[in-house]
Image (tube, rainbow, N blue to C red):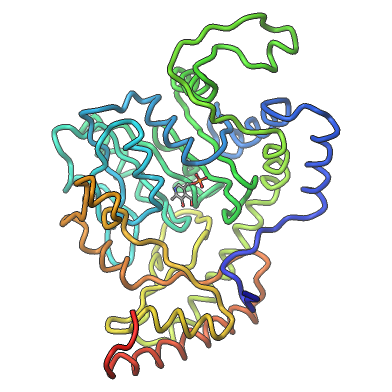
Length: 391
Ligand SMILES: Cc1ncc(COP(=O)(O)O)c(C=O)c1O
């Protein structure tokens, strides 16, 4: 489809092209000096001693939980309103995901109270997600974790270089897990990163990333090591030099692009305040957000299908972030859902629509989206009064 306003549009240019060409010419294609440079730069931006690059946030989450010894018999609390990978990673480890609700209809993140409500005697860890790039209440969550002896993993897929109280998201918990998938605030095509302040965890994460091996090919190539031992049941979650080269370029501009996203979100908020009954979450968010997504909550009684169809006809791509994970067939069939503990997440899951947002979006495009949404909501509201003819 030829969208007038697509949902996202990755910012890639000549610098990225050159960086990839340089890797190909160097003939060193994976886990080399560029990956190390990307890790150092990312650690420094995040204010942690160690960052390890890997090939997705899904891999990052799996490694994080494995490094924390999460396994069969353990419960791990995750948000219901997230991408399925957050919960899947818990299941890869043989543990049970337990779903927590959003804090409120205005704050779509889990908080200490919503986590505490679903604690079980078997709860060992919590994975928090900084939804849409807005910080969870980390001081409250870390205080609960300290009180209850819980490990904390941050899913920072939406929030690179965001912070709360001067501390980067991804530097609050035991491990931070980032995504550089192509629709994210910074991209390496596919890619991820784990961050940690705990040196012993960093060592384990390094092993888990590459088959449990104690030395890397690069170290052996450089003559720093001859052999290796295998000390853990590891995976192949390595990042290639091509991805790392892209990441180094993208990282240099992510703060500037986050700020551009923030300006667009302000423009959206101003215009959408005119749409009666439309919910705009995170109006009172704290900290420096990354503004990854622009979700809105449709007024009650307005059919989402009609709104999204009308938006498509106006050339505007929209999406849904997210259908609650506990409602998916694979979760229901496994006896892990649907949860009765997450009513607000279910309500949001039925009424959320995600609007286009990307740094090169123009203000006229924001105007177009807002006008199309206003018209679509009015039209859909009317349609609702007549008998339904479609889904
Ligand atoms: C909240 C969240 N967690 C995890 C992931 C998984 O990221 P990746 O595609 O890098 O595995 C995503 C990707 O969309 C996400 O949005």
